Image 1 (cartoon, protein in one colour):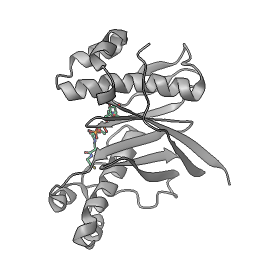
Image 2 (image 1 turned 120 degrees about the vertical axis):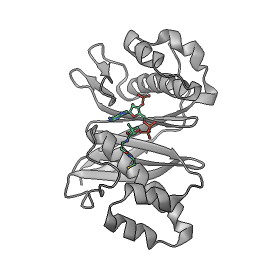
Image 3 (image 1 turned 180 degrees about the horizontal axis):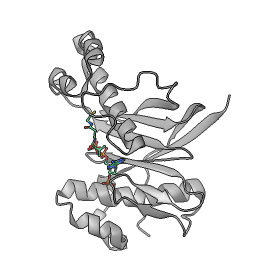
Image 4 (image 1 turned 30 degrees about the vertical axis):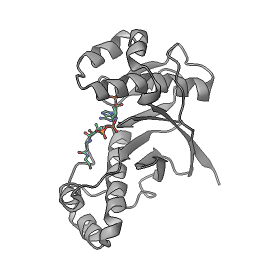
Length: 214
Ligand SMILES: CC(C)(COP(=O)(O)OP(=O)(O)OC[C@H]1O[C@@H](n2cnc3c(N)ncnc32)[C@H](O)[C@@H]1OP(=O)(O)O)[C@@H](O)C(=O)NCCC(=O)NCCS
């Protein structure tokens, strides 16, 4: 059986001096950073860019000169010959980056108590909502984060809003040429990875990285 290998890398903002890293960012990134005011979000953005570079070096041995990061539309992608597909996500101190030979979407969420029923009512189609409400109360937290991360990861794969609140998930994932996998990237963090492939998904989740700025 053929497999599609997807690598997921993580880094923790608490282990990095993001202010010190800022000077190493390219002009495009600096322009985007200038529009981000929230301190935590700034750290996530900065570390995300360095984690991506770290991940590319780890996976491909180098960052090819012709690979250009473009994120003007929100969805980041690398253009250039042989460039892999990427997806970024952050939640609190955790920053994550997926690298794959096929289109991918990654979403990481910190799991906390919320009004899951009210949120589910906003993001589910009628059949999904019925299924969600049929879950025992103690399973609703996990049930909610499974739906949420899968919707967000699918949205990111497509990079456009075909997975909006209220729109049901494509239930026949396999038939639509997508595969997905859930995983726990840390205590109280939950994640979904979606890939466009007909092959078996082989997810390689790397331990948290210490990312160098140079
Ligand atoms: C854009 C969106 C997907 C970001 O997700 P999030 O959980 O808020 O934030 P995350 O940290 O996981 O992801 C942020 C990263 O996603 C990437 N991203 C942003 N817009 C994107 C898009 N349109 N497509 C793919 N990736 C995108 C960026 O890399 C961004 O990080 P950066 O700005 O530091 O580069 C989300 O805010 C959104 O708009 N979702 C629309 C669908 C929706 O309403 N979902 C609700 C549940 S169904």
